[in-house]
Image 1 (cartoon, one colour):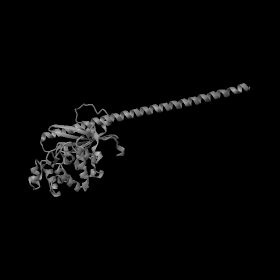
Image 2 (tube, rainbow, N blue to C red):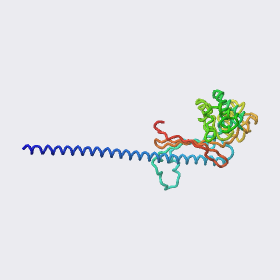
Image 3 (cartoon, rainbow, N blue to C red):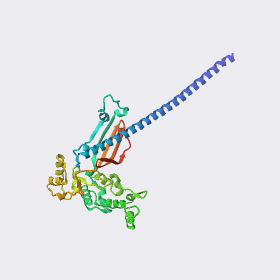
Image 4 (cartoon, rainbow, N blue to C red):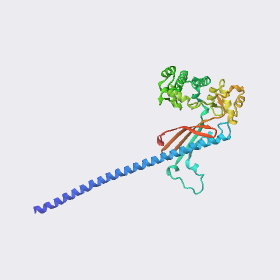
Amino acid sequence: MTGTGRKPLRTAGHQGAAILTALLLMALVATLSTAALWQQARAYDLEASERARVQANWILQGTTDWARLILREDARSGAVDHLGEPWAITLQEAKLSTFLANGAVGEEPLASDALQNAYLSGNITDLQSRLNVTNLVLDQQTHGPTLRAFGRLFEALQIPPAELQLLVTNLRAGLEPAEGSAAAANTTRNANSAATRLVNGTRLIPRSLDQLRWLGLSSRSVALLRPYVVVLPDRTTVNINTAPALVLQAITQGLDAGNAQRMIDTRAKTPFRSLADAASAIGQAESTFSENLHSVNSRFFEVRVRLRMGTLTSQERTVVQREGLLAKALWKEREAPLDASVQ
């Protein structure tokens, strides 16, 4: 009787162990399956993000090429650039599909669902509507008329004159040859060290307004100067058809606020075809404007493009130089994709 009583106990023990083992196996399988699914989902997200990034790059490139085409076609219309031309029209945010809806009947729809919800915006700005920092130095010497123009602008914006002097000193030091005379070396050593950085024996010259901090400008001054100052690789004149009133006053000696506003009102109706037209519009002598400082056309433009696809936002800034019918991109600056939910 005792033997027969113990057999059910052993059977129950084996059954309990089998159930426990099965539960452990199920837990292990569930854990491995969850990890595999997570890895798969992560790989899909990475692939989707990379695909969206590549698509955004191509769209931004295409938009920049479109802007270059607009500038090239504008060059065919004449030698005067003004704010009434097609390039000056701001492209408000619009669905990308609206630009592609004019294709032939029967074309395939957009391949990516992301492109169906892509939004594009941008604008072209005349960079010669601003004072060019490069004009401050000519043949290793400070250019007097440009220095006085910057002085008037700094005064109007209430920026300390000492910052302008530091800017000019460090700019001249940065433009000196890496291996020069002893006097040049002394000037370089006395200049702001950030302005005399070397890369393979060549000095780093700022190419954007933010980089003017290398030359001694404060962050506050850079922010105040941003709408009125630019850094370009070549000497330029100020286009009186596109420059704001403050720039017109700065670049034109003796021009008061009233006459500057009169110029803006006049050119809005009829753009100036020559410097003589501008002088006549405000009742001044033709000598008021100089061909060395003023012009009615432009060679340098800035193209800004913003693309939004879902939570991905890409922005690109391109500086374009136009020579005749050739419009080439000098450099580009692209911001990292941002999460639209945190903007």
